[in-house]
Length: 459
Image (cartoon, rainbow, N blue to C red; front, top):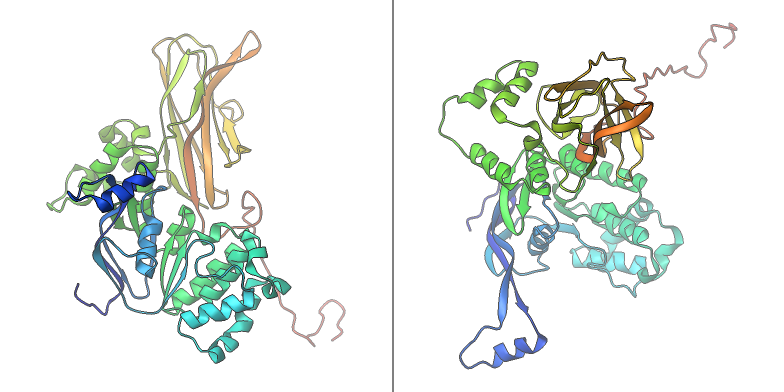
């Protein structure tokens, strides 16, 4: 591998193969076999992975569980050796991998700080200077003088992260560690990461928090089952990741082919992109078939009803008319549902609800609440319903449900209901307290000491 001063990390054709044996005795049989008979199966944790990270860049690695994210980080940090391929690192690494890595459980917090500092190449005098900042950041009080085996997971990660981020690393590598701390500590960690990022530190991070990926990363690498899938802009990679989650592999392969098509010229899709946002959305529907095939749909959704109506298609559109599961806080978006009727209904009602991950209803509405004029329908009729509103929920992950209901002989009747049919990822640059943003307008007036009080005339 040729050296390049532009890159902090270079990964070239890296594979990691584990030998899997059905029985422990098979390992001994293989080692003693004169004919070199194999008693194992090869498991590719990584298969020919290649990517580069530029100096000063923040890169995220995303993928489902078992995709090889943590394995590639361990290889980059030297914890694991690749079966084949090369990794070149230019700079001092400070790594925060799984809890317990690099810490002696019988040592106190203070002892672990100095031990890890020595392993990173710092002298005792240098660590003496850094210690106050580390302890202030960790904020675990007198527990720092106790063996770390007595720590809770939250205290452990606070100390580990405080150490990793306050030793002025050239390269910071973080693997899911922040998911353990509370929201306030996570916020403090991200602020500190932003500070060192502005100072030129290269950051490589693995996380399942797609909001953080889009907010903090310059670029994202997508892995799946040990294979490199793609890399590029965070929003685009998260969209591809959602397709993997929903097992939409055919759509994923089609999109990857489009991304890698450098034939030139403006094709039909390009001409669609150059239309106005509203026209863009409708044009994409005409040329792309069903909306639900282009977003992440929950394969394990719950649905029921008496069959008189069928929600056969649905989608979400951002303010620019893009069909997507990713929505920006503060922007308008549209939920669209298409309903086909298999019987006559006098007054159908169309609904949607947004819930949090725990299942609590956060917001929603229906055509009856909104006073929409809905006419009676008969077998074969279809309705297309658009709900347009402003996204004021905080950044995070949510679940969308929708239904077609009504009243028959005074009884509430469900014709078709889809529970948790799709996810909504809200991206926010500013979260306030609670579930949604009141969109406050702040005015603060400073009255310097000694200024004349205009109401009393007194200084």
